[in-house]
Length: 216
Image 1 (cartoon, helix red, strand yellow):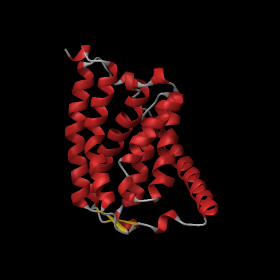
Image 2 (cartoon, rainbow, N blue to C red):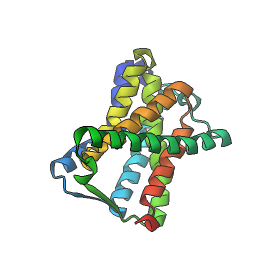
Image 3 (cartoon, one colour):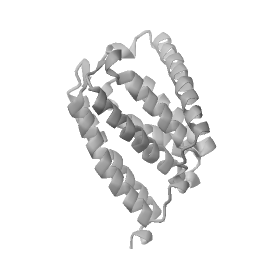
């Protein structure tokens, strides 16, 4: 029965299941946006819990539809791990340059609208880093780009980046010059090499370095 579902409906189901809860929360938080975005244990555990449930359901659904780990480009190797470290560095440099260009072009600083404070404990942060990067990159990038290959690179990459951006609207204007370009970079890298593990490594390192207790 599941295999007879239209391809477009599968794409809608996966994205609503995996990112619907985060998009809704992001939009609701945006309506009451404050100058301080607090990322604490409660929020981290909510994210991890939702991802465990929705990710499990999504994988079971995709498996019933005939998808495989290899089909999504998930393979862990030392070379891909090193590539992920370089991707993290290159992405941060590219986003920093883009940020400065936006500041110069608009004569304003998007980062002043909101500030970000992480108060996540180390055990919770480690747990989140083991779940969130794999969840995001597997579904928002690998799945969407493979599922939309026939629509062309521009459409697939843009849609992937927009879904990621939609789930981070609560961060305010800063998301437009950080999350959006990051989504485009990650999706473009996956489109070229069809490997998701470097994205997971880069994402995990960004999260850990940005929220580790000693960095606060």
